[in-house]
Length: 318
Length: 319
Image 1 (cartoon, rainbow over the protein chains, first blue to last red):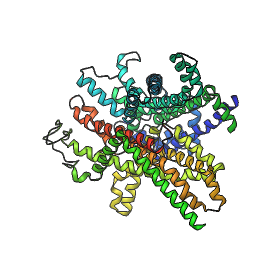
Image 2 (tube, chains in turn red, yellow; image 1 turned 30 degrees about the vertical axis):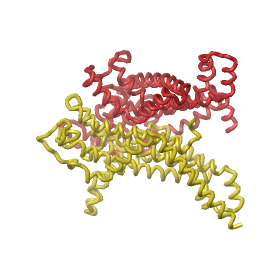
Image 3 (spheres, rainbow over the protein chains, first blue to last red; image 1 turned 90 degrees about the vertical axis):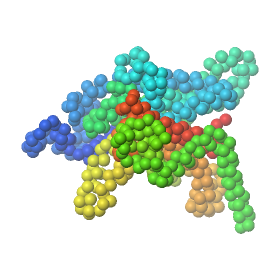
Image 4 (cartoon, helix red, strand yellow; image 1 turned 135 degrees about the horizontal axis):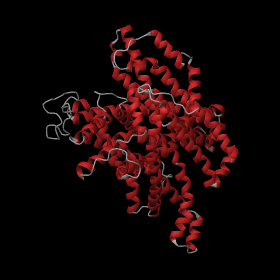
């Protein structure tokens, strides 16, 4: 097991570096001179003093070759320093410190909720296979899977506010303020169908196993059969979706935070795009890819723990 | 001998034909899928023949009739510049359609090339392809496309300006084209891994089949094996991929223009219409609702059709 984790980590590290290198190269060669970007934005009539510009460039290490600059950047990241924003001059760290908790609280809560409710709905659907409840749940999953959050969010707001006369759900007052319910529901609904499908298919597969028939025929109550024999193997396919869930939730949070006025990473991304604020964009890419890859790693590690058959397969592979 | 071979060929063709006929029957029996298909045909029709059906030009401003609610004259109302929203929604369908088709085509091409390279050559090449697929699948896709668009657009526009100055060719003045090219390219870049994975998996599984081994042992050339076994076996999953990809690309396109990257105004896209509508929804909800509802209906239609196709072509997957 330890060797397996080490193996994964050794494969994971170059991947992160490669992604960052690609993004850094895109920004480096695509966006152009950061000094010019800073000066273009300086308020008023800034004299374009070549010597001063060169001095700043020298000081910031921006005249070094590409790879040296990238190395410096990686070095700074490893020391927890993401540099300064080109627009406000604030340190990216402080901007992240304000935004990350908002997105992570809402995102994690959404993922938690949708996993539980999705599994529940999937199991219910499978136990009522091909009856109206099953069709209802599958249809619901198809619809929520289709509609993107930046469509569902505004439409729900319009209905809630103009139709039902509720207050506009806008702003961030902490995770336990009722304001957070609408964005939370929208964020949870979209990827829930992934879980519903997996859980439903998983249960349907398990139902035909011999040990379920045995458990039933020896007179175990239906509840015990479901809880002990069916739910357990369904966990594996559900857990395997967590990586996808996290990507979907991060993507959705970029799209939806503006609609609900949440000051999280999504909002930060949007303003950073509008202002071409590259240090901020790079830092967000770094955080997002790290989160996704760490969760993929955790999923891979938990696989053999959940299902010994997977472990046997993996050892056979290597 | 020759006669026998011919006979077996024709019977196989018949079987193939039956397989697709079967799939078609199953698809048509699925009511939701049929509804989805009808909606999408309608959208494609509107997208292709857009200029001939729109009641107004999408740029026509009627400043005397701004922010009007839906009426007989303007079915979906007008926006803050007095432009007819129905016409803009129809042109938005055109934008979405162009992006969806080109992105699906491009990503499928990349996927076919890389996927079959990996599966055929095997060894180090295959390991590399699989690793590349994993890497691309673990990047937050939306963010990657945003970075590509934001960082390369100024450079591309700049380059086109230089080309125009050098050649005086009007072609290079077309910045709309630059927008589209970037959207196509970056979307294809995040979508090819799925296609590559499907193709690679299909080829690998066909390669293992006994009848392919037998064909190889008989000395059938590989071009013929590809034509006879690999392609027919991969067509089902590829059709499912195409239908899913068309929908996803449309959604991604709208998502970008919603965020302000991607296709820029005045070219109408459902995404930037929703984004515009968000500013004034409390006063004029129809400006937001029209494009949002259309996009919602289209995506639900895709979802239904994709599910139906999946059921019809891979009957083993669902019980």
